[in-house]
Length: 162
Image (cartoon, rainbow, N blue to C red; front, top):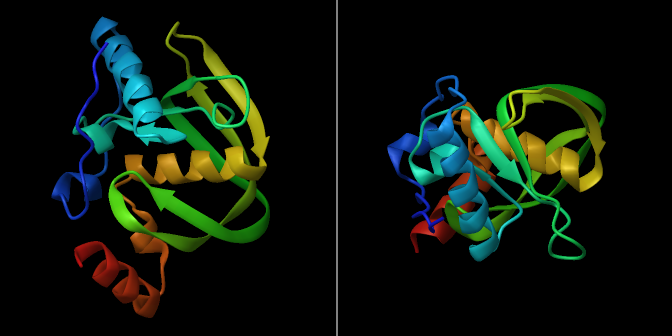
């Protein structure tokens, strides 16, 4: 396993939609490297485009900073937004500096393929739901900056570029 360089905004690859991932040994190796990179960053989620691979996969571990590690790998996920909308702080490993207030669904149903090729389906809420939406956005080329009002985005961009 190895640490991967994390792309930083405004790298144009971060704004590109990703192609479906092909589950093979290369993707499994990428997932392992992404988990190692995420933990070292230190983050709770990391999407393949953030390390320059434009495929629909992300890794996540919302528990490791406060409890035992519980890494998850989502290959070709789909997300259904459920519940009320909540607004809360979000940081991003690809955007140095600002933590921005982003509106998200309070609950999601996420369906994906795991690294063994098995279909998974889970209902998530709280921080896990927020993290899934954040990482899933990366697969569509959407950053937290894209979810801000023009005024809030201008302030955040100025902070990043300062």
